[in-house]
Image (tube, rainbow, N blue to C red; front, side, top):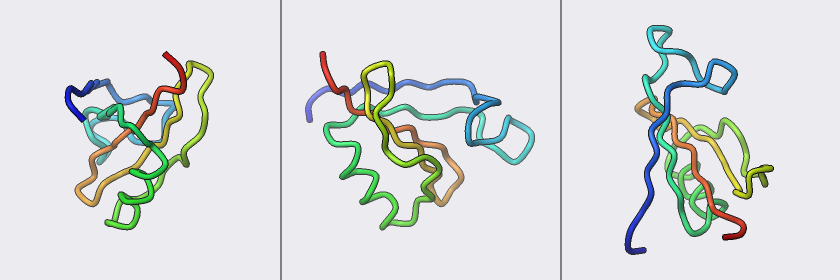
Length: 82
């Protein structure tokens, strides 16, 4: 895929991960991918912890949330419509 969108955000205290200083990451990485379901399956097979299963969100994206073996939070998204 040529060209990618990467979004960094502050931790969400209402989200599935800790705030900084509580053994959690300082950011969550939002990555837009062509197929969130396929990449989520690959990530879990490679050792990522599934925090939130892929689901359609009200803002028009399908999203999953994972924690990699190093503790980084990955929010994977696929746009459902342009």
